[in-house]
Image 1 (cartoon, helix red, strand yellow):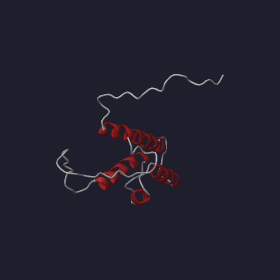
Image 2: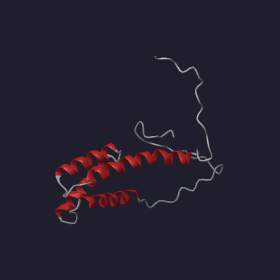
Image 3: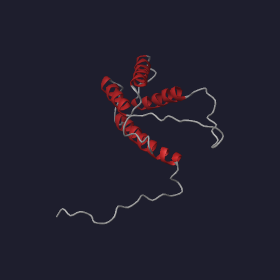
Image 4: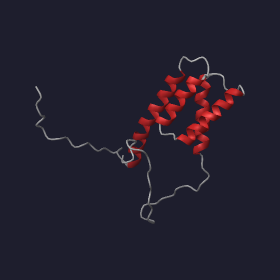
Length: 135
């Protein structure tokens, strides 16, 4: 009934698209899909933006590794806009989150122009366990 597989373990296949950037995109794709699907489920069928929606949104953002500070800022912004009647529809919350994240990730910095062999650079990749830093 419980027999061991006596075959040798298969080595993973490597293809032309298995570069570092490709693996980053694949890992981030899983996170993006999880976040966007969770957000879509959260606002689907809701008629109004209420405290329950905001609590669930906060949980989704924190579990998606957005960070406590950014999550608090997003929730505060949405709450303020709901109070001013700028946001009334739960679907509009998705657009407000998108706007906030784009603004937060927009940086006025010189482009990272790295040419292999030109000089020595160190790239530090930071993240919690299980988010694909090694891929």
